[in-house]
Amino acid sequence: MDQDRYDRGLAVRRAVLGAEYVDKAIQGADDFTRPLQEYVTESAWGAVWTRPGLERKTRSVLNLAMLTALNRPHEIRLHINGALNNGVTKDEIMEVFLQTAVYCGVPAAIDSFRIAREVFQERGIA
Image (tube, rainbow, N blue to C red; front, side, top):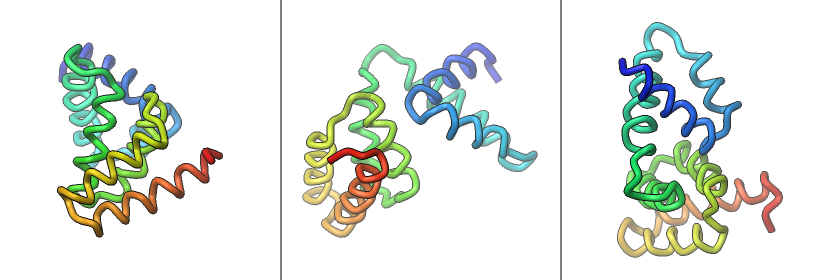
């Protein structure tokens, strides 16, 4: 493991997803899941999210679309929060999910809209 890349990834992961969530995931890892936590932190967050080619806001928008396409509700919930933390607005999230309805299917978009509404309510976003 590249410790520097891991540390940079951990900082970005905490900034986007929230330190409480990330720390809980890492502290809850056992011998079976620890390698995955290390891989995700180093590779996804340390090698990709730290690249200068896209702003975090853009990366968040892409994640919302891809996770809708993959029908990953837990990850969608997590990344809606991350997108909000990265400055993506409620209206922009709506537009992303409308776009996914066309290209990924209405049922997938409906699920993402429902999850987004729950997240907005939890965060007090009218």
